[in-house]
Every structure is written in structure tokens, then in C-alpha cells.
Length: 182
Image 1: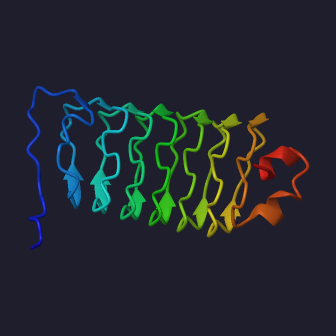
Image 2: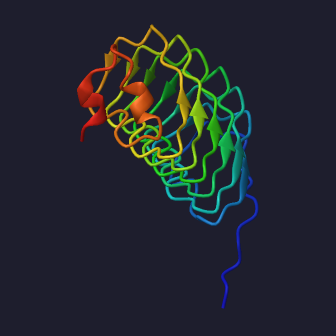
């Protein structure tokens, strides 16, 4: 017997932060966030494997750690320019994620942020980014194109390990060799 799928959730207007406690059911296809929300807290959509799309309003200024962790059906996400921080492991295991934009206010791609985004084919890193965290793009096996702006001054260990454009990136002398190691 199939369990019913939750199609929508009504968020109270006085709520400002969405966290894992607010989202009890994992079978969510689409999620519209009201403009009263200012933060998507740690693990708020953790393992929502049926989530295919989400619209993030410009009222949001932060995506917490593990925010979309293993949302394996999420195919794309548009991050508004109001976002100033993307937490650790934010998109870890989003295996269907094909594209993502990173807005200019963000200055760091943190620990394992896009690890195992197996369908991600290209990413445009804005010049505002100065650091790429440990294992950030590791195992992004479909990644064929990634621009590396000169603004990046710190590349952490394993950030490009087993990514699809690893051989191309090894030609860039600015990128340390440990970026391609576990």
C-alpha cells in the first residue's frame, strides 16, 4: 500500500526560520517559501528525496549546514542575491542537481558543499569567492566545466577529487596538488 504524498505545506506568517522540526514529512515535491522567512536553518530539507523544485525568496539571507543534504530529486535551484552564506554540506548528495547559480555576495564555498552532485555539469564561480572548502566538488563526476576566478586564494584538500574536469583543473598551476587527493 502506497503512503500518500504530501503536496503542500502552509507556513504560518509569523515564522521566520525554517528548520528540520518545521518539516515533519519527507515526501514533498515542491516547496514555496513565504517571504516572512529569513533563514533556512541546518538540515531543514535533510533527505527530502522527493523534493524536485524550490523557490527561495529574496527575504532569505542564509542557507544552513546540510540544508538540502541528499535531496536526490532536486534538479535546479536559483539562489537569490540576498544569500550571503551557504553552509557546510548544503547540497551534498543532490545527485539530480544539473545547474546552480552562486550569487556574488557569497565569498566562500564551504566544506563538502557540492560533494556527490553527480549530475552537475557546469558551475560558474563568481569573483566574490575567495575560498573553496575541503571536498567541495569531490565526486561531481559529470562536471565538465568550472571557472576558477583569480579571487580564489585558498583551495582546501580534496576540493576537486574525482570531479569530471579534474584533468583540466590539474593544468591550472594555482591549484595545489592536494586538491585532487583524498
